Image (cartoon, rainbow, N blue to C red; front, side, top):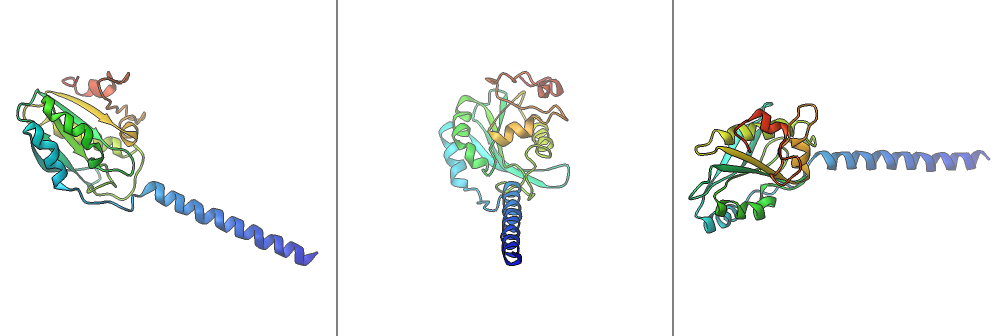
Length: 193
């Protein structure tokens, strides 16, 4: 009988240890992006060329000192509107290149930033919108101070929705076709929309 209980205790300990190890691995992989490829400038060239747009690398500093980086495209004939294109989790600003390629041709100035912990931006933890919301506001402020930008729109994927909809701060940046287009962000910056 004692031998049988000892066997079950060993099995139970193995199961508990496996659950703990798997939980730690899952948590680490959901909070950090381990593979962060460098951006390819040839991709930016391919986005800018058809519209005759110019582009450059840009960088701002987050409230906590983390460097945030991305690409900034200015069309040959700007229409006064700018778009922030935000990528999803485990992606980079290169993940929105399809949308970025269409907008300069239509006169939109485009910013494709890497979220913290993604691509070439600094930071190592992903907070699923808790800290990223402030980063989106910093990018919006920066973009609205660029020459010729009078209106600002935002389009994004999963992380963008989380980053821009933090209920504690009423931060929302959505595309004009979204039901949330008239968001609190528009109240913060009346020239938007």
